Amino acid sequence: MKEKTLVKLAIICSILGIIALLVISESVKIEENNTLTAEDGDAIKVKGIVKSIRGNEKYTSIEIETVQTVTATAFDAVDLQKGQEITVIGEIEDKEIIIEEIT
Image 1 (spheres, rainbow, N blue to C red):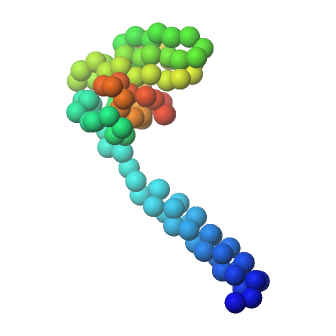
Image 2 (cartoon, helix red, strand yellow):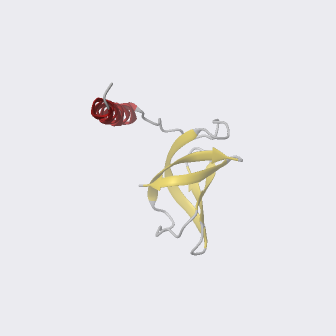
């Protein structure tokens, strides 16, 4: 094959691959889970009320009250108040949630 043909084929395959990844990523949903029955490394979504907040500008540790009290950690400063209702998406690590997103 000619070099121009290979370059065109590579670009078309790359674009199709990116489109396929976007379609697949939209269909992946994390179910809400109010208990820590998940194993380490599992993605989790928890909705609850902020019970306490501790930390500094490098990290924030939040206790979230759901069916049980859950500890979640964000590795930056977050602006939350005690009693505020939040939804946390993160990953389980040592029975604690490492926060990826707070809404």
